[in-house]
Length: 102
Image (tube, rainbow, N blue to C red):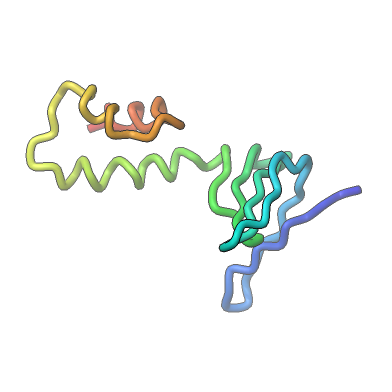
């Protein structure tokens, strides 16, 4: 059976995404949290039926997380170890990759 997530963005626009396996499904006090697989986007984080991030577009989020702090820092050090210590342990490599562009 094919499952779909319909993400209504607003203003008469939405998107429907085919879902494979549901890896995590939990209703917390605040929201419905799911981690699902997609044949096109890989693993996806879905909150209240709204797609938050996917494996396929993770580079976009790392760009946003890194560029603003690096642009605003008055003297970014060439040694990246202090930056790495402040990053959350998940996906550090992608953030380091993005940081090295500066």
